[in-house]
Length: 556
Ligand code: F6P
Image (tube, rainbow, N blue to C red; front, side, top):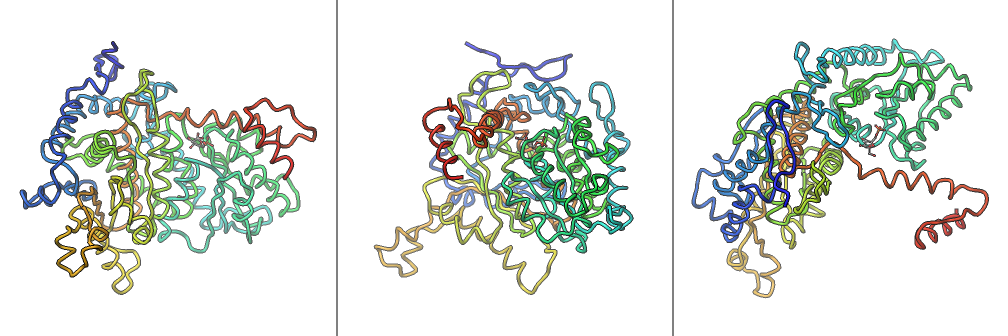
């Protein structure tokens, strides 16, 4: 029997963490779950009139109401105990100390250093990385300033009016999401586009109508080897040169790179003077606030970008220092574990009632699922519990007119995170009050539903009553912030990063590797020449893959 799965903590005093099912709180939670299975939120609220104020936390500009969850005080006590038994405190400290907590890649996890203020100290292999971070930020700011002011000229002497970020995964989703989220603050005289998919349509549409003489490409790739990004980068180079008379010297004025791989950047033909670096201790999906955010900085300007970093840092500090019972990411992370592992909920819906956050759920998909979609523990043992929930969502109120039906009356349990803002950036008549009334109404309807008696009392015929009943007791968190500012965005993203951290710690998995994306990449490399070969290739796949390849070759 494996008694201890792995060790965490400093080399001075390692903490031994028992496998999850052997942690006392886990078993207590399983028993507790049974004991409260008949309890409804309606009853919990009736028994405790102050519940709606009591089960709330406010920190770093975010107000979290978690009262509409299937929890009692005992649930929260046991979940907090589970966090303790899972070594969450030690693991947070280990992350901030720069320890190599990404064990399968033997790397530190220091995205928190990307938003540490000047003067802070965060060590990586004995070196303070904060000055390095600020050196890159200053270089980005100088460059962004030159582009925004028109001082940086393209090859023909025209100013840059269009910025196209070429990247995928963490080198795309963060920049796109942040651009959309902060659109209100962007330089409207400029055009920003994003190319990620290797589908040529993505590139073709992104450059549609753009003048190459006014277009800057930011090739964003941590590794500078990613097939999609390199394919798009070469296409961008060809498009750019074709529009600029074919002079290869034009590349210097129309291409910059964001990467950790200087050798590959040079090989591509970009002067490393025009490269913005970051480090292997920043995971791709945790990199939107590194140089990967260059397009964001050009769009909103260096000052706004720094405000965003300050928002991130505020939430980081809250996570690092707040007691767990008042710690937003810890509470949200534990609640999601509660539903994932004790209530068989497979998904979490993230529902921003803010149009500018329309790409936030897509961004969270990579953050949460690439991080916690893991089937072995840090020690390499097959887990015997469910890990990473499926995150998905759409902005409200659009979702209400499509998939909310299933959330309200379907057979599956879908915990929801509603995100709303007290103030709108675009005050227009009654729009914002109407929008926010829907946040409160949806959370209320999910929690309390509508009984058969209530439906009958409305004069509904008996046969129709079952169709119109809302069972209620469906959980949600409501997150309220003041206004969607760059700082608020930073706080929100950090909040979810640390939720992921909390979940991963309880599940004892490595939230910072992504080996699961490798196999498909390798197989695609093998299939590419089989698709393009002039002669019939000898195929040695399974019969299905062989037949699909043959059919594609016949019809391409
Ligand atoms: O394939 C997954 C992945 O490695 C992500 O983790 C990463 O964000 C993305 O690819 C892009 O990688 P890169 O920035 O190295 O091009």
